[in-house]
Image 1 (cartoon, helix red, strand yellow):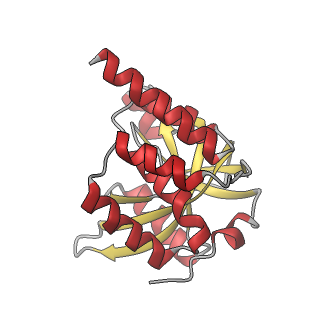
Image 2 (cartoon, rainbow, N blue to C red):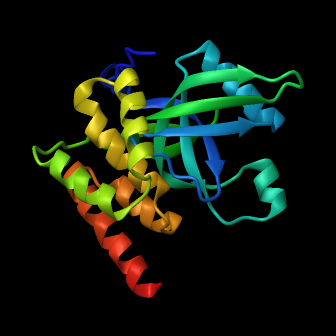
Length: 212
């Protein structure tokens, strides 16, 4: 599996994309997120994405009651657009998918006559620094995954992404797996620079250790 051109996908924006609001789930650029799709409206969302540009934005579900969730689930304006990398249809119509993060963005809800939410998304431009490899080592030492899992994930991402994208994708994967509140993950996602994102992640991890 190779040849995922994230820069080409980012060039499509701003554009209208489906939004999948979930509680506690924050996708990061370059990171992988497996999802189980079972609600009818999200089955339709996946079907539409497969027939189109394969883009789905992950949004953090805001607090709401059951009635609001069933009608129009509210989501935070900061989202991460993902590319539908893998899809496996199950016999009963459910499916398992894997998204790879394309980029963080600001979402403005739109209406396309679909049972799922959609939004016009403007991407936040990512700034890359020359010290990202050194920072990644520090983040790895302070957070999951373990050494073997880290190496395995690096190899998998290297098969999917251009080499220049892998350090940032690994940093996003560490942020995604970190045992910190979703609100802090959103703050990390909003950071336009990889170095600042990594430094803030270290700050959040250090705070969580002191509180524990």
